[in-house]
Amino acid sequence: MTDCSSKVPWPQGERELAQVRDFNRKLAWLPRFKIRNRVLPRMIQALLRVSQIGGASKLRKHGLKAERKSIAGGSVRIIRPKGCAKGVVLDFHGGGWVIGNAQMNDNFNIAIVNACDVTVVSVDYRLAVSTPIEGVMEDCIAAARWLLNEHEFADLPVIVVGESAGAHLAATSLLALKQSPDLLSRVSGALLYYGVYDLTGTPSVRAAPPETLVLDGPGMVEALRMLTPDLNDQQRRQPPLSPLYGDFSGFPPALMFAGELDPLRDDTLDIAERWSQSAPVEVYLLPSSPHGFIHFPTAIADSVLAYSREWISARIGGQAAISDH
Image (cartoon, rainbow, N blue to C red; front, side, top):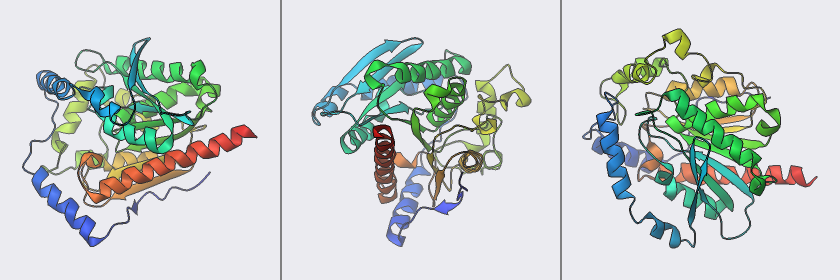
């Protein structure tokens, strides 16, 4: 058991920080992501699919290809390394539970496959525009169970990765796996970027100023209520729906990141503190960084992603050494 350094800033120089602040000024001109109805998410999803036409060529440039496999409740998209895989990454995409798909993280996942020599399995869960959040969670839990029982991956360490709503789904899946300790013990680590862990809204969500970047801070509490229309706040706080209040005993080590300007900042800091009572947790607060910062063209984002890949390799290498003995 280790203590969590829950407010460690990411190391950066003045030039890197100035670059982030300059990009923030551009973000301030863009509309913030809002969940007000089901129409806008469907429009964004359609645009996403159009933008992904020809995506296979991106993989071919790296000598890779994707395989889609149907499983109970949905499907997964598998990218294997050119050589033997040293481990498996189970990837849960973000998008507020209402947009996104397994292909949207290809840039990140190609880099992980090549740098870490792992197979990446991305979950194509149903979206909450047409499926209750409980159904979305069931898809992700089914994908996790499938992977951990799949013969191809039987002897390989597993790292769970999630971003934003995907981080929420990664955490809920780990909590569900507590019913199968033998499967949970095979998960060597969890890499989580700025997740949503309290569906009633943490203090940083409720106090987010109107000028919040990327996410609509003031509207997030109402959006979370729209996601769970038949529940009251007491029910919304129950795990695994709100992973923050779960039991983290038996959980793997974790690496977590949050942006200083993200309304979801407290979600990461709070869950890191609780998680660290059961397993080692590294958590970093990114200066002047908004939600979604790993997608932005900054040196800080590049360094965070590079460190994430190093951490994956270290966790996989360490677990492989344990297995060999």
